[in-house]
Image (cartoon, rainbow, N blue to C red; front, side, top):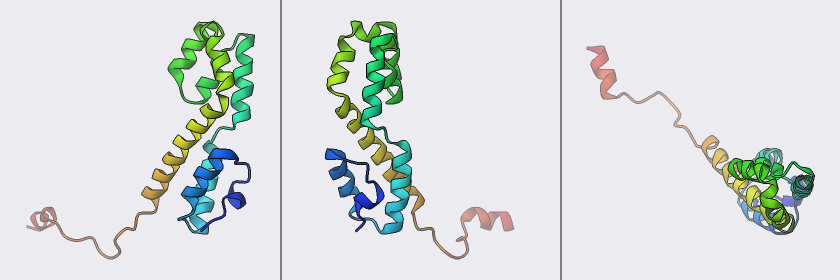
Length: 136
């Protein structure tokens, strides 16, 4: 069982509990790999807050672009954050926006790790029907 605070000390709140649940079934090597990939791809809630605040100065929607919501980012940019109402709502919900994005990143990282950690059969490749026809 890997210690989440050893690998990802910057996590807090609900995200910490969620990632702790993911790491509990991993050994130290897998947890270190997961934490490296997750740390590189996750978004900090403070960064989302700062980008959302920049929306009041004419660049609305930058936080949506960073979160991968390109359509909403374009909409916010063209409508000044839906006349600043959407930007204000996002200011209130900036932590949940970051949390939802980071949970999605955690799942993508897990699926990436599961494909990389598949055990491949050792030994020679078994013969198929195509191999038998090639020899004739």
